[in-house]
Length: 116
Image 1 (cartoon, rainbow, N blue to C red):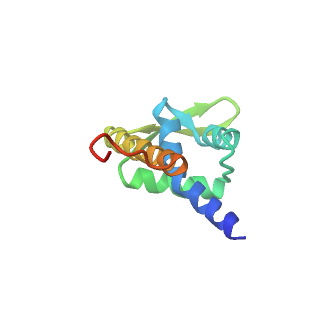
Image 2 (cartoon, helix red, strand yellow):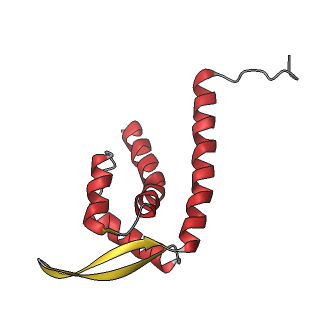
């Protein structure tokens, strides 16, 4: 049970970052975001994604365009704003720092030349 809770928290922690990464590649529809997250094994349902997209939009990180659809109502396609691009760059830096920290923890810290 403890491992499952930790795994859930880890996934939630990187979900916003992953959503921004996906949207950074270009205009995208919410169901396509869900499909990509599921393919990446970050299982997400609409009830999780839509509030996140709304929060990101309200924070100025995303905008959207309505696009007419031949198979139904217009669709909302999301794009990053310039501020969203800046935040994503900061999250990229944080992600690389975390990967370094995890790798270092797994391998054990190696003394630097000054420490020898």
